[in-house]
Image 1: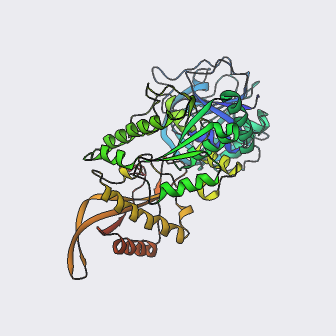
Image 2: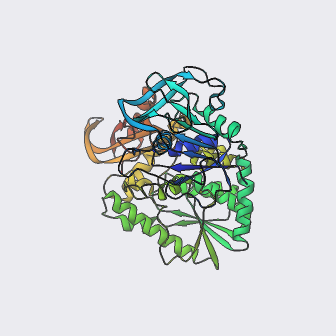
Image 3: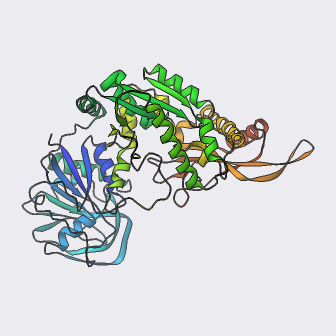
Length: 509
């Protein structure tokens, strides 16, 4: 199948966005680091070079060998990519007199240029660079300018090679999607065949061939990723899939029984394991967030391994790994500095002698949801807010006790139920409550109280990489606060978190 797009990553913060925009055109693409270009390029019909935090004028700039790409496949170079093609091919790149960052408008578009077809004059673009191309490379022809950037876009004569100094992948470039469509579909001739239905058909067939008659065990969480992965495997291998849903005692109120009932209706072979006491015992007295995560991860593997051994002759462990995790693990700079441990990433301990199968490893989160809809998973489940693997343990600041879990479960249930009642749930990307390690003075009736404080958190986001706090109606917050204080014994104060990510994170730990 020669309808794929190769994106070479030079370390730009926007590289994943390029891939998402290409996928939105129903075109399959893969991201590879610039220094690890695939040897076999036969399946790629076009190539995109990403931007970069580096400068081509540095002593050792990223400098890949493009001899198997340049002039042989349609090529679109973005920002650093455009400067790279100029700098190493007879052009000249110099520091900008003024930093070119933010919104700009095209002031000139050369007539009859395929890359700018259907793009109006004065179209807004997003600049993000401190260098600029002063002289085009050999064969270069300027095809677009802004007021401050003469060579905002160029092509190389005699080749299907195009370069732009702005970012078409960000929303601020209002016609960026059209430009990518012009390049990929009209110029490169890539066919738009990457649809949820096509993915399901291809993946189910690949799973059948890979797994054959072997058995697969999968840890379900109740979340979107593991559920979609389970249903794809179920379509491929039926009852040879064994699902295990572990109650770590840190789930939301009634979640263990509710999720098990939901899975039963979906025809999945699921075993529920209540290991609440085992987790809470290990967490007793542990306050450090990283230690809590590691303890939960360790016990989960132990419980899961115990249950997996009860199933004879299991060959594969299935995981709901998605593409951002894969990209991060092979990025230009390697895995980023650890902000917090991820419960799913890092491989298996040596004692679990199982092969890995990851049906979703090439999908972004929004694509996972579309695939889930394609195979008939209920809208309510697909729209479920993300929930952290360590559960309420990282929403209880300080040490964990059964009583603290009870309090937070009650608070969380009131908050989430209220969002649904007010038709706000689907307008929020993620919401939850946090139990703070402080008490505050209050008055209930004629009595003084000294009880706990909870914080409510609701954010809007597309992928969790960045997030803004949601401006929930004051009346909703007022009624929710009153309900929590009146119904949850042990709480006398409610606050609302209005921090965005960055600088804050979505979770508090």
